[in-house]
Amino acid sequence: MFDNLTDRLNAVFKKLKGHGKLTEKNVQEGLREVRMALLEADVHYKVVKNFIADIKERALGREVMASLTPGQQIVKIVNEELTELMGGHLTDLNLSGSFPSSIMLVGLQGSGKTTTAGKLAVLLIKKGRKPYLVPADVYRPAAINQLQKLGQQLSVPVFPSSTEMDPVQICQDARTIAHKEGLDTLLFDTAGRLHIDEVLMDELCRIKDAAKPSDILLVADAMTGQDAVNIAQSFNDALDIGGVILTKMDGDARGGAAISIKSITNKPIKFIGVGEKLSDLEPFHPDRMSSRILGMGDVLTMIEKAQAVVDEKKAAELEKKLRKSEFTLEDFRDQMVQIRKMGSLSDLIGMIPGMSTNKHLKNLEVDEKEFVRIEAIINSMTPRERRRHTIIKSSRRKRIAKGSGTKVQDVNKLMKNYSQVLNMIKKINKGGMRGMGRGMLPF
Image 1 (cartoon, rainbow, N blue to C red):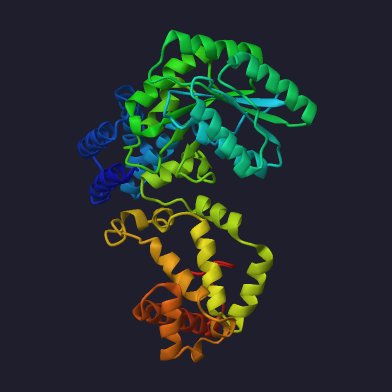
Image 2: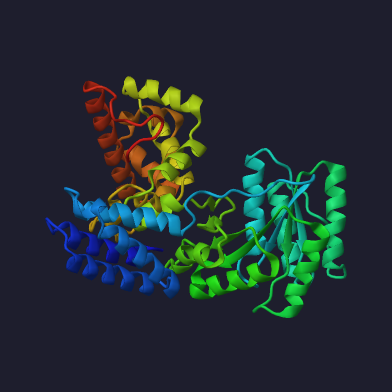
């Protein structure tokens, strides 16, 4: 999403780092290019103006001019100011107040409120809470049906709404049921419109007054850029929202909304949608986002993703196998499945410091279907073949290719890659296990 902005900023920093000593002139020239890069990324012009002024004040001070590495100091300043601009720190859901807690989702039609309700339910379950999905959009039968299907998929109860019911009454009745059933967090999926109007805002205000939600979250489409900021301001003026969820952050959005919203509305971005799966909702960390924008990677998020999918017991067993160089094709497959659970390989590469600015990797097209082919090939092997790869000769490879719907060349390629991994493990074992992460392999 931030690719273009990242490229532009890194080009500026490269120039500044090339100067052994910075002057007011080359700082001014660099900041002019930063300003243009931010405007092209659809960042609000008022935000850009204040941002550049703050950086200029610090960049021309002793902090930079007296430094031995002035170019790096400016990168540090931009990183700190960008982090502060986007909120400074993680802001979690507000679930305080009377039992049960409730979260009211608002936004325009098509912003992704209903899917986001399901994604939030997944997060709440992980926190040990008992969510209750409440369809309060009575104008779109499809929205009610969608939330009911999501509830079935997640084994989460859903209030039995219908198009004849009043949205305010739905939310009140849902609270009563949740209290009786011991469901501690209601998720109100409210109606949207194609654009903001008085009828919509009036209904939302009545729901707010009647249901008294713990938190009100605006769900906004990051692809709309400056419009998302204006929409956030309008909803905030009417409802005093608690924060924002930006959806479609995995798309081609230029990133201006993510950078501008906090400064314009004084309300934080709490979550970002990074894909279509129900697990594709991430807490918004301003410091990590700033690092990614500046091409510094996001190691902490990558570690959290790994921790979420790694089974500690299996990791310990795998470590023992690695030490004895007993890494089988079954282990190869299992590790590949774990990596896939962490997200797309392209996204993971972008989280590694320096990778997003590497000219060889930046435009790397990762064929995610290759993982499916590899898994199919290994699954077509017998248990004995998976554990003793040396017995897989020509006739077996033909049978495996036929059984997996692939070509013999695909099986040969897998066996070659697997042999390279085995050789790497043997070399590492000769020099010790230093530098090898527990449970995850670098392939």
